[in-house]
Amino acid sequence: MSQSRRDFLLFSAKLGALGSLLSRARGQSGQQPEAGKPAPAAKPPLFEISLAEWSLHRALQSGSMTNLDFPVAAAKDYDIRCVEYVNSFFKDKARDAKYLADLNQRCRDHGVSNHLIMCDGEGELGASKKEARAAAVENHKRWVDAAKSLGCKSIRVNAGGDGTREEHQKQAAEGLVALAEYAGPLDIDVIVENHGGVSSDGSWLAGVMKLAANPRVGTLPDFGNFNLGDGKQYDRYLGVSELMPFAKAVSAKSHDFDEQGNETATDYEKMLKIVLAAGFHSWIGIEYEGERLSEKDGILATKALLLKLRAKLA
Image 1 (cartoon, rainbow, N blue to C red):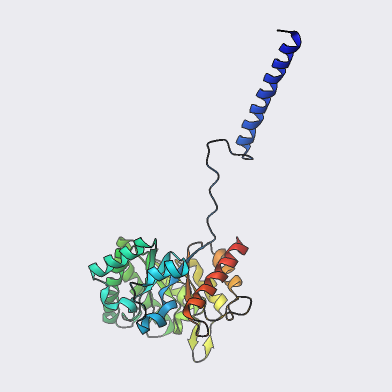
Image 2: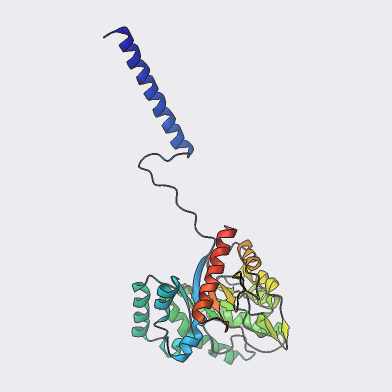
């Protein structure tokens, strides 16, 4: 072999070694993944979107839809894969094992998970009489059991009661803790929504949470339920900020939208910034209550707004 041929082969070998070294360096620095290694995982979304059953209350109340249809509609009509039930739409089924199994099967068939059950009409957990509080706790236990059967994380309850502001606060905390003592071993949380009256006073409900001081007791801040009665409204942004430290779910209440797709009563961007600032990145439930748009259009408009802002704030 000639000297020039040997020089050429030696140069080529050195060049190849240098290329290999640079390739390994790029892989170690993260600039370019090494062959055979998976690409970095996508960042999780800022929050997840669920659908509250009350958004379809007109269809359910008219009989054109049943509770069993709800998770199917969530998946097929809205491409939402997590749902929040309302107990009034299957009031007599809380301990009907066959019914709950059927509901679970429909969810599995459509890739839907169950997040919570909103419970109304089961007594006042903040009643002044101990017997009434105990009865309310007992009434709610069946919904804790139903939530467990459905794979939910929580039941949403109300903090109704009587007495002075301070008495009612203490009574509500006692009732919630009593229910949480039953729900805790089942891995179910007991959460309270601002739902009219004194519960729509963010400082009052936050005070209930502080008195309860139980990890299983929390809040479900609703963007719009701040009606104190007698024509008085609590500041919704202040109220949500007061309730977010205890939040285990959030309700994105909506009624109507302008031509740009913004909700007309609530500044959603401002509200979502409050939610995210509290470190909340879990489920935000669409709860459309408007009348101008159909239920379907209202749900889709709310979802579109949440998705737009989720992308903007990411």
